[in-house]
Amino acid sequence: MRSILRRLNDVVGVKGSLVLTRDGIVVASHISKSLSEDLVAAMASNVVLSTRRNLEKYGMRAYARITLVASHGKMVFTDTGPAFLVVVMDRNVELGPVGIEIESAAMRIRQVGEIRV
Image (cartoon, rainbow, N blue to C red):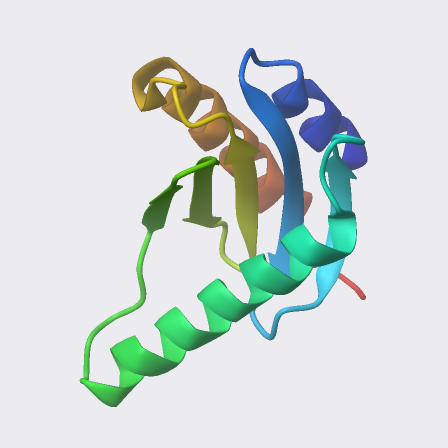
């Protein structure tokens, strides 16, 4: 799984990526030294858990992908089945080309099968 994340991080503008279980536990990560891995993991876990909880509260189904745009960057959260792929990017990155790489990485993570913590 780390090789999937490493390959994804080679895409221009991607600062890091990680895989979270549905309950917010980090399975694997590859984060740029310019970011705090703990901070990214905590934020990603909070977004995944609170979004899922709120969707369930209103009787809505789970999401396939969320894009969070902030003043200093973007985060994309992609459902991979047993976990979520989270990708941190520069704010100015176009999601079209990077989105293809993210979906490709998500497909490879889905194929990994069971994720153990």
